Length: 98
Image 1 (cartoon, rainbow, N blue to C red):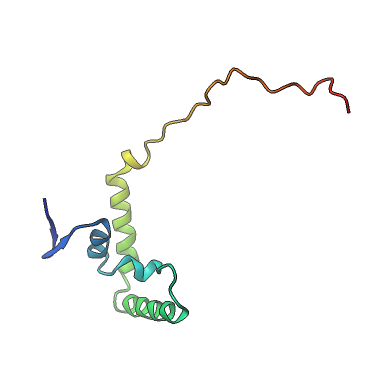
Image 2 (cartoon, rainbow, N blue to C red):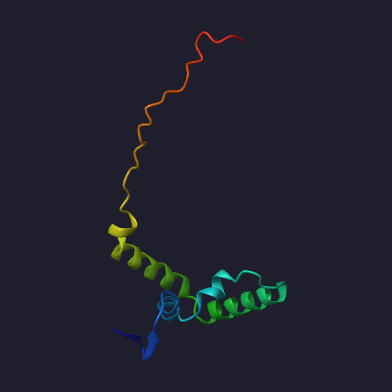
């Protein structure tokens, strides 16, 4: 099954994120090993995008809230872990020589 958003095919999670935001996630998050020059250029581009679209942070927060709401059962399906009984006890320190 293929997924298309606005005529663009999304084949990965990052594709969906990029199409939802209109920008690649790496623009906002950075990439491992980027140089100072690359980081400065990335931040300049991000500032330009925010200047052109001041509602982007609100849109991103809305999208994130919708995703969390849609997937809350899986995200918050927390099961408490129990400690397995080992059958051994720690030795008591009562009466131990000093």
